[in-house]
Amino acid sequence: MADQSTKPDVDNSESNSPMADNTALPPSPPNPALLLAVAESTTSPPLPPLLPTADGKSSAMNHQLPDNNSATTKERRTRGNYIGLATTAYSASLITVGVMMPVVASFIAVGLYLTLQNSPLPPFLGLQPSSQWYTFVYSTFLTGILWLVVALPYCHLSTAQGANPRNYNLLRSRLHQMKASLGLKDYADSNYEEINTIDTVMEHAGFDKHNKHKWNLVKEAYACCIDISRKLYKSPVGLTWIIGTGYNSAWTLLHHAEEVMIEVADVVTVVRGAEHDFLAIEGSEINGNDELLDNVIQAVEVLEPEALAYFKEHQPSKSSVALSQLTKMINKSSDPSSTGNASSKNGADPGTRAQPEAAARAMLREVRSTLNDYRDKRWEGLVRQRSQLLKAIAVTGIVTHALLCITILAGIPPVAHQQFTPLQSGILAATMFYMVGAIAGLFVRFYSESQGGTSVDDFGLSTTRLIAIPVLSGLAGILGVLVAEMFAGLGGPALLGSALVKSLELPTLFSLDPRLLLTAAIFGIAPNLVIKGLQQKANKYENELQSSKAAET
Image 1 (tube, helix red, strand yellow):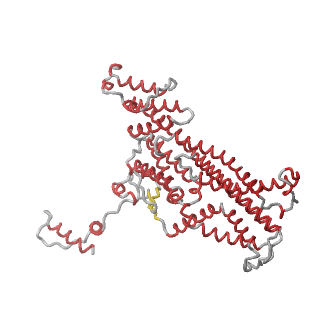
Image 2 (cartoon, rainbow, N blue to C red):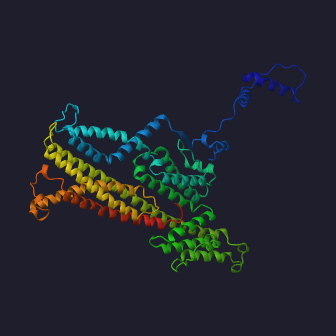
């Protein structure tokens, strides 16, 4: 087909040539190279080069189609990826819900043990209801089924978007702004562009490769944005988002990218950021905040002296002289009367201004880094405290459940259609003490939480404290009654009266006595003293974050 379409064109060109005559000549054989070139031009468009050109620069076609070169690879989640993400989310949800499952298992075991002789339960795994292991095995099976079912609706909380929606949306917004300033594309969550060669992408964005200092700075910002995007796309679910460490690491990377861009951004953007940092540091408790404020003012005076009118009245101290000397250098070089050079009459020499401006930008970057480090450590403190509380809940629940199982296995199993055994009565009384202590501790915690609180996002720390108090206070109530009865048994009726003097045997340790209920309530308040200390430390973090916030960051 290509030969038929090109032969008439060749013959026409020869007949129209001024060198042609009217004599009949034998047809010349066609030129294969010419036919191939014409055929390719009429059948398919030219293909872009797969490799950079000899001079190391990308061709125009690569600029127009950056997605088709080897620097980037557009990725889309497959069905296998979604299955893997769902599995990871469900596993993280199981771990999160599992923190409270020992407590739930204890209540199920107590309910089964107290109603065993009056419930027509069938044998389970070869165990008869009269067996000592029946309650333990059956309650464990029911708890496992409940655990698997309850974890399903909590899978959404295992995602970066569901664990902390406000933090996630704010992070995505700031990342989108950073990508826009770097010339990076921002795809939806289901699409992602993996950058294989940062240098090529930076060339496509228009950055000058010959300016090594600026090139390395921007490349550093690119690396941070790529790491955050990869984290949000390839690991959007997991335990790190539930705990909060995923957000902290992402914000640390984004803050570093913003710090780097201070040295390459335009003056207006840098001065606007300096004003934000000034307002944030002014009312904060950062060590050396006066010196940081002095550095901001001196740097702004170097970059944009007219912008000093927008800063509050803050007189720089005499100790900050480094940038002040650079300012004098600029003023001296820009004064026509100070030198006879014709170039100085038109203003400061660009080479003379480069050094102080670079020093001013570096100083503003250092100030921003100090502010970000101060705030990031406070966020990490809140996340760390929440993780410690979750561990305390899990350990307390496991210990409580283990003690209950040992008590049940060591006792005599109940007989069908009979009255409560002494062990059942003791377990019922201990459950009542647990509930009274938990309720007493919860009331005190409600009152304490209502007295404080700020607008700072604490990653669910206050909610975790409310969950931890019933678990800790319930166990404290039981231990309080146990200590009171042991003292009564060892010290006679002087402590709690003759009615409470009894033998220190396991089935008879607990009894439903009003005075013991009061003892459980008093001891149930005790864990609030520990939680109160943690709350004061958390409030300190929140107040420091609030005082160092000039805008929504």
